[in-house]
Image (cartoon, rainbow, N blue to C red):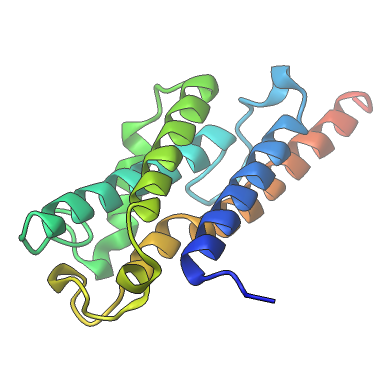
Length: 177
């Protein structure tokens, strides 16, 4: 049996994790999906999580475009260093507080599709070979793609499971009052 290559696995895992993420959100009654939970953490509702993923897709797309144009992209973003990533993520959170959950779902699905198309446009060798592209420095394209899709979605699934659980537990308590 011929095993699938890493590119195909990345595409499959990303789509599978996206589906799982959306199923968690859909498991909550639609009238309750916009509820923000009480937490000290940054992401308090499904919109926050989806817009975080959406913005990291956009960041990846900027890195990719600049890198493929022959530039070395500023990472993670202009004005930020990797050690100040919490500040960048807080800025992302603040930027999307006026977005509805429906808008967030649409934006996230579209950005996911754009990134999947970027992945599909490369051979397995281009994705898996370290230093294949100058802009990825000592790394490979796979690590950039995976960090902003399949593995980032695993983080989001855990976040959304906790949010969904908290909303559902809140439902139980409504009747006790």
